[in-house]
Length: 272
Image (cartoon, rainbow, N blue to C red; front, side):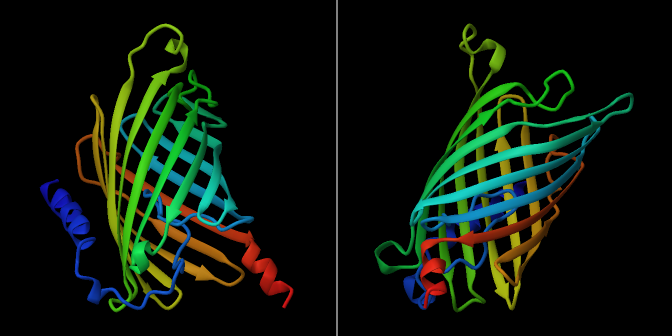
């Protein structure tokens, strides 16, 4: 666990390396659309739409959970997007029962500042609202309304295989839906994600260190992954989070398919 926090400190310190190591990045270039457990610094361009379909699996002391999340992102203007994510199907299997149904809903927005001051430093700020639409009795939802503001900072190193180092910090404030009107107790979870990716041809090799800390849980994961850039603005990625703390799940896998279309720039290119 100490090694994980040491790695996180290295990722953050890389953001402050000298500028002469990072020249040459194309303005607003997006080597990838999505990571696995970290929010990217990129937002959708004006009138650009992105659809992400995932397949998440994890095993823990409670049982096995399989989820199929579907996410939509739309660019209102360049660098400002709105998003909607819904767990279309969840299946929880324990030693005695098996339940299935739809999961929770998340609504979000994000704004990005790219190539700040003509450099290769980027930043984004976002906010997500979690709505407990899943069935609590079946174990498909925690039944909590969640408010999560976050900030992402990233820096490109084009001379090093188009390396990017990134860090995300967020605070999730949640309260049980049944107690919103009465009990004012609020659960607070601090989330800190760090990592990097490098580009090799159509492949993007990613590494993330994901830390989530609340009053009752302390979870740390090392998440290696690979993402392939496919024709027609498609991406396919596989990530395998490895639990490094006592509270982390025993095993996780994340599969994502991303499709991006539309946008003012694509429309202009299509009319040439």
